[in-house]
Amino acid sequence: MAKLQISRRAFISRTAILAGGLTAGVRIGHVRAADPPNGVVFRVIFATDSHLMVNNQLRSEDGLVAALSMIGSVKPKPDLILFGGDLTHESPHLDFPAAEQLIDRFLKLWKDNTDLPTFFTFGNHDLVGTQNASVNRGDPRFGKGLYRMRLALDHNFYAFRKGGWRFIVLDNVLSEPDGSYIGEFVEEQLAFMRAELRLDPQTPTLLCGHIPAVSVLPNLSVCGDTKTTGTNIQSPASLLAHNASDLHKVLEETKANVKVILAGHLHHLEQIRIDGISYINGGAICGNWWKGAHKGCAEGFVVLDLSTDGSVAAEYRPYGWKAAV
Image 1 (spheres, rainbow, N blue to C red):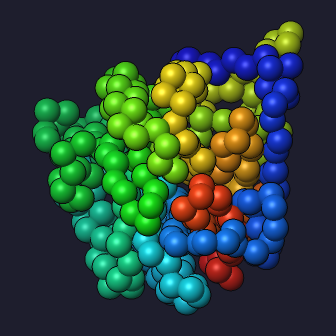
Image 2 (cartoon, one colour):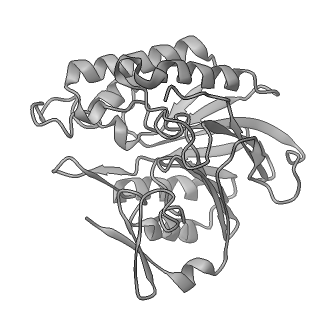
Image 3 (cartoon, one colour):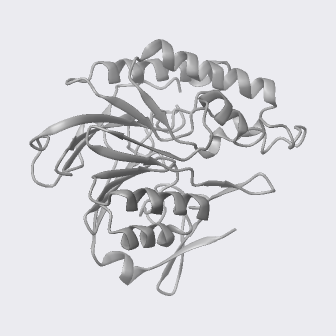
């Protein structure tokens, strides 16, 4: 499996970090003030990693409904929800009928409990049948196919514009032949992003992909583990996108006005600011996979206030979920 290697010295330079477990709402975004920036025109909920389980195990359905209820109570009312992936939990292990039933249950719960426009990101747990040897790998539902069918997507990556901002949703989950996966920004999506950013590089832009491009959490053994060899920090490519430098090159080439890069996957809150870009890993709706808070990070979501001048204020809001175990 590929490894992500980062020089300690290169990582520390030019970088500011916020990471931690949260039990109450904490503002993590704009450095100027605790209040939203002046001229806020758009409010976005970033929710991720709901891991809806078969037969409502660990009361995951109830938890999803509770999270959406809390999102519905946010004032001022959000303009949209951006979901960071892992809609469901067991899909890689399921056959096609069971996977269909699970994602359909998720989408029904979502539709019945929020009227906010929602834009979804693909997560590794949204793969179907990749760890089930009995399924037909030639079936169009295999892997990422069912997800695209149910969400009516031509591709798992796309861009849209709302509230004076550009949003680019990427799929950086790369399935391996043995059923495992790694985090990778593939060339097709890098080319798509490069072309999109060059259209108007001045527009404030938010990127979202399930697997983080940057994180210190594995190095802290908060989420997975790293190995240190000399001055290099090595993290499994299943935890972090192994070619984040390719993403960074696109940002440098285009000189685009990218302000925020969102991710899920690690089920913990983290913000790292590099060269004016906030890399935010947004906790998890399900916390520790519905078994309570994940090493101190409560079940929750991020409220983002986006201003037309490119300013961003972000707040992580736990929704008070009580785990079944």
